[in-house]
Every structure is written in C-alpha cells, then in structure tokens.
Amino acid sequence: MQFLPLVGQFAAQALAQAPAQPASRTSAPPAATPLGKQPMPMQLAWVYDAEFIGYFVARDLGYFASEGIDINILSGGPDVIPESALVSGKAPLALTTPDTTIKAIADRGAKFRIIGAQYQKSPLGVISLSETPIHTPADLVGKTIAVPPVNMSTFQALLKLGKIDKRAVRVVPYQFDPTPLIKGEIDGTVDFVTDVPYTIGLANKKTVSFLLYDFGVTLFNDTVTVTEEFLTSHRAALVHWLRAARRGWQENFKDPARYPRLFKETWFRGTGRDTDNEIFTNRVGQPLMHSPEGFFAMTEEAIQRHIAYFQGIGIRATREMFDTTLLAEL
Image (cartoon, rainbow, N blue to C red; front, side, top):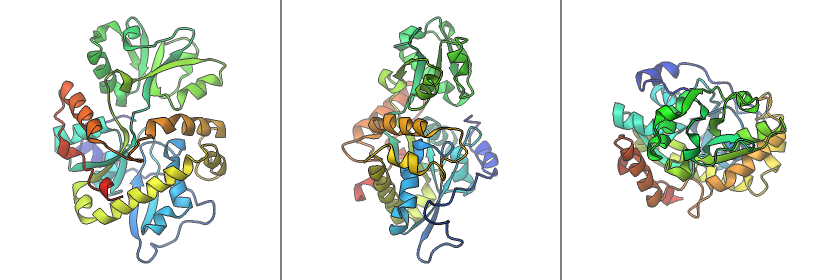
C-alpha cells in the first residue's frame, strides 16, 4: 500500500471503486437501508482476510445491526489509501496506520481523529530465514532488506532509533511477495509477522522475526480513524460501532479456527489464501490485539509512547489527535 503525498492524493485515490463485500453466510445484504439504521461504510486497510475477521463476525451475527448500524465493509488493497475514503466521503470510518494518519494531521492539517486501535502492538516486523537469522536491528548491518514503500519511513525510524547508519543496510522494494527471501536473494523482509511466516513455511522454510514495536517503533496498527465532522455529528453511532466491533472480536477469539473455516466461501472466497493461513493469522494476531482494557483500547501510557516516538523522528504529534472518550462509554 503506497502512501502518496497527502490530502490531494487522498482525494484522487478515493475516486477508485472498492470491491463489493460478499453476502452474509445467512442472507444477502439488504437492498435498502433498514429503517432506523445508521449507514456506516468502513474502509479496510487491506483485502478481506483474517486481519479483519472480527468485523465480519460482527456483521454476520447481527452485532452491528443490533446497535443500529447498517455496516458496509469496503475492501482495501495495495493501491488503496484508507484515509482517501475519509477525505472523499466514501466512508466516515477507516482502519489506518497511525504513522500515516498522524503525519497527515501534523503536516497537512487533515481533520482526522483516532478513536480506537485494533492492534495494541503493530504486527509489522523484520522477517528472515532461520538459517540466516536477523534477531535484532543490529543484525541488519550489511544485509539486504525488502521494504514496502508504505513502510519505508517506519523502517528508517527503526534504523535511527537503533543508531544504525542507513547506508549500512541495503534496502530494495518489496511487493508483498516473500519469494526473493525464500530463494535467498535477500536477507529479510518488512511485513506482518502474522502472515508471512506461514507463507514461507509452505516452502519448507522456517523463519525468525522481531517486531519493530519491541525496538522503539511503539505504534498501534489498524487505528480506527474518523473525520472530525463525523465524530461531532455522529458520536453516538460511533460508540455503537465500537461496541459491536468489540463483540465481534470477542466472539471470534473464543475459537480462532472457527470463523476462518466458516468464511471460506464468503468473505475469504477468491483471495488465494487457504483456510490454514487465515487461522494462523487469527491466532498469531490475538496477543497483539489484547489489552486488559478491552479491544480497541488506547491507554494514556500507549498514547504517550506514540507521541514520544513521533516527536523523536521529527513529527509533531499531540494528545488531541487521539480521542478516548468514546471508548470510555463502552
């Protein structure tokens, strides 16, 4: 997912049509908005997969409907900028990466607010083969690492925090395909540890990985981001959305293997990923999403870590960019 120059590019990108969501396992989506329901499209950061399974559970089991929300879950992908959906009005709510969202607010004056965080610790990590392992940032020196354009600034921040000269690491483009790593053409990739190790395992290779979070890049991921205008005008609906989505994740993690199997022919049809991959993603992601405060929590300590991280790399982040008052109503 390439993050282009903000605001103007957001608006241009938002004109693209997202794929239609699949029908529920039990019934097709209604042809018209149900009486009394608040329409709420939400833009995902990536394609339909287990990263977002809690929302699919909440929709199919009627949790959103019971909260008065007529949900429409819009697929993302490598060319989709979630914030563009907010700018265009295509969706009032999007799952974003906090570094791009905070930068948009700080540098371009984007009128966004973060109201929750799906991942308490970002799943973004450095993944290598166990035969040539990379255990820490210090091990990156002299290595060739494939980095997606969207994560380039985050990776450079990791090097800065580790006091590693960026010239000591050879960085090449990464298109979310670990084949070059499997073939030994590169030493590591920057990707989600909740997914790529499974893919590499299919090639009978074992992996070693570390989270960027554990070495100073203390970021949430899939942050629930809305426009200031929608937050003001539809505050109650957003509280209902958070409550329904939280129920969806709670239900999903009662058995992380159940819903990947149930959704094989609906939400996950045609993705090219097998059910075991979705189960792997679901299980590995669970501890990264967990908080004693409940799903989507943003504790003051975590927010202050974000602010300190951003200020440390020269981005002006403030407490006002995070609104925790809706979570307090759950």
